[in-house]
Length: 410
Image (tube, rainbow, N blue to C red):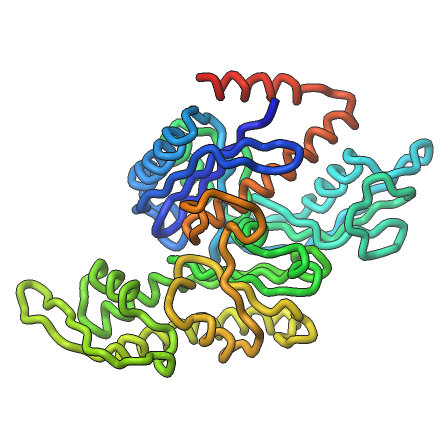
């Protein structure tokens, strides 16, 4: 019997839910849904009741398609309020065993999590940066290796407890229980990056509505994660101010006439802009709209580059042979690939959630990449936990599968 997993991404502009069946080999999508979000600003829930409504709508769509009810979900969380901390874990392998098992790896992660934290802060997620077995670095997976000491460089993701608590309340009010938190940038990376890109060296840039995240992968492990609190809504705001438009009109203008590169416009057409409060419509050039969009996107990309450079990482083809992968709703903007290549001096491709795994056509959009990546990580952790329970001589997995099988039949 297979396991049912549900992933949810409560973003600034939309909430996405995916329900999938997890087997030993893959995830099979059973249902998915997306709804407009309100009550969320830059990834932070500011109105629990409004956020709850968006969660309920997306969840209902996915459950109707999957023809089952879910009570537990894996939730993504991120944004500039989540900080990355580098930590190091060390454990000793018992001499009588002399090989690394799943329990050792779990203990190593707990060892790395034993760090002092600011008041009202908590660790919400982690990622392995490198394993070290008896002093030898660059170990991809230490399970089964002979060792006397296991070490690991671990990235910890920390956020303020009140910000994550409000999201948990919104989920619980929508009658679902969050069982795990996946940090959004890692979810994005797992959804769209290929194994070859992760191994060679690649930068993922996820330009969403409220935040722009960046993840650096080298040698198949995440090396650095950062976020800036500006993204697609910042572009919309600049259009509102520059063209004196209400938010909805500015958003529609961005989507229909937006171009990230003024020099990329083939025909500089006239664009009619409706007047506010019954005023006469106005005409502006498409190139003027592009000037506003290009300026803001260039600023956002420069901020991302600055964060990377501050951490001693050079943006060049030698360090990142796989270049840059762009994802997120704002990457639908025309000519954005050429703008990023001009600013960051690396080759760029657009990443979608269907790049790594076959998924339904309707799900292969930036709406679903974070929820899908969260499920991929959750599936890996589920498989790890099964092996961990066997190492510990326990067998609760059987009962969990029975429970999920019953839920499928409801």
